[in-house]
Image (tube, rainbow, N blue to C red; front, side):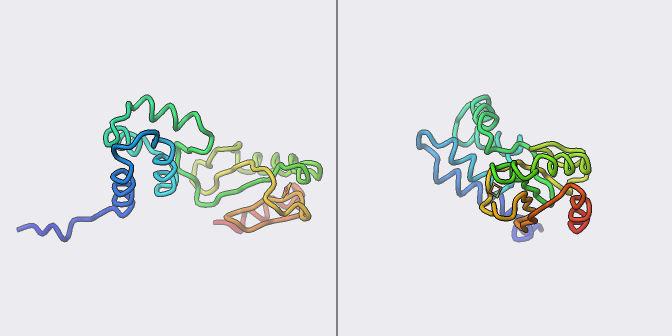
Length: 160
Ligand code: FES
């Protein structure tokens, strides 16, 4: 005899189901639903978009179209560590672009990409509020300031 209590429940799926039932039957909900789904999963997989489409009765092409139109949505999983390099005015003036080049060369990824081993994702951002420390890179929320390209490799080694 099988016991349903042993079935594994995916807590993320439970959360998504709750979001979908809260929005079901309402109009103009696609963007907030996609935002909440991304918050739950970290990105919007094909499977999640299909479920949203089915449940809310929105054409798959429309769901995919909105998810790809807005830059806030990610269609691939993020890496274990998120590198945010600031190219706001202060950081740009103080050599942020050179630091970015050093990161891109070291990790062989560009803005919005993730390394093939899933260790790092790279994002260019505008001002993170630490202009006095420009140029600045934030990794998983740790701010590294007054960076020079030569220090990039050593800093990244601390994130395994
Ligand atoms: S411009 Fe880079 S932290 Fe403000």
